[in-house]
Amino acid sequence: MFDIGGVTIKNRVVSAPMAGVTDRAFRILAREHGCGLVFTEMISDQALLYGSPKTNVLLDCRGENGPIAVQIFGSNEEYMQRAAEIIAGRGADIIDINMGCPTPKIVKNGEGSALMKNPGRAAGIVAAVVSQVSCPVTVKLRKGWDEDSVNAVEVALAVVEAGAAAITMHGRTRSQFYSGEADWGIIKKVCGTVNVPVIGNGDIHSPEDAARMLQETGCQAVMIGRAAMGNPWIFSRTLHYLATGELLPGPTPEMRRETAVRHYLLLVETKGEYLANREMRKHLAWYTKGLRGSARLRGKINSGSSFEFFTREFWELLQEEQ
Ligand SMILES: Cc1cc2nc3c(=O)[nH]c(=O)nc-3n(C[C@H](O)[C@H](O)[C@H](O)COP(=O)(O)O)c2cc1C
Image 1 (tube, rainbow, N blue to C red):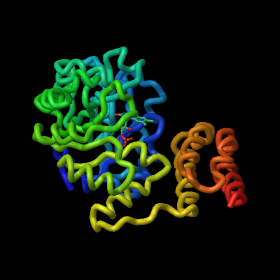
Image 2: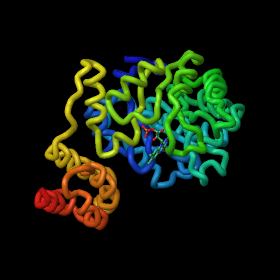
Image 3: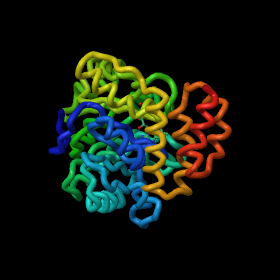
Image 4: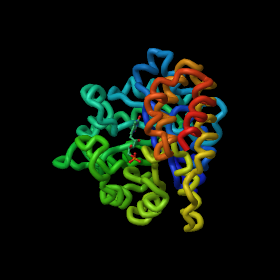
């Protein structure tokens, strides 16, 4: 258990924000598997201010219990402040500011990881948002822009000074995007420097990795991203391993089927059948990765477009492959 600016987080395992992945359906399953804190996908400050209909879906957290961090991105203090106010009004427990997104169309506007190049602006945005809302404000950082400008410690200090209640530290530079190895040494350095909780992130693929990151870096909690795609069991298995030292087996094919169907039904409930059919394709490929015959069925998954397909037909085809 730990505390972020007065919000109690019941354990040390956190689900990462991932655009196109960590929507309401994903978060409900992550929580059912015990996750202590979940993050939304990143949401643009300007889209929030214009009231774009898509942001309503991103903000949909009907029926979700337990703390949720809503992540916003932008580079303008006033827009970020107003966006944060809107989100706080919709019940976010924590507002997280994205300073890690490496995508060219984001960084060219000075947003996401571009803020790592400008600690003064990063701190200004945090101070502006903190002064506007009463919930805790957190920041997700990278190691730096590139290997020649590693400055996570400096940026972390600046944003904490400006009022950030916790830091998530992804141990990669912007130049690395998602490749190469995450540097856990920088997570340890930031932990040793700031006086707020640090959530360590990058390259946790197994419960053992999570235990190792907690031990090696001294971070308060671990954040799991890609390893949770099609795999909410990573959260429950990690929690069990941290509590007992026992490694539970991965899910059986039957567990994967049940959870994938439930994921699909939650997507339908959240976004309607048309969008659910499109979005379920990637989730289904992740849920069935490694099962016999799943690679051969990839083409069918990619053209799957009906309720019947995702709840029954696909599973019958998979059964025939066994
Ligand atoms: C598909 C995808 C989407 C992502 N979207 C976001 C995002 O919206 N906000 C954010 O802060 N990080 C985002 N990330 C980064 C993850 O939160 C995390 O920092 C990164 O994947 C490293 O953790 P991992 O090694 O456990 O995957 C995204 C990553 C992926 C793979």
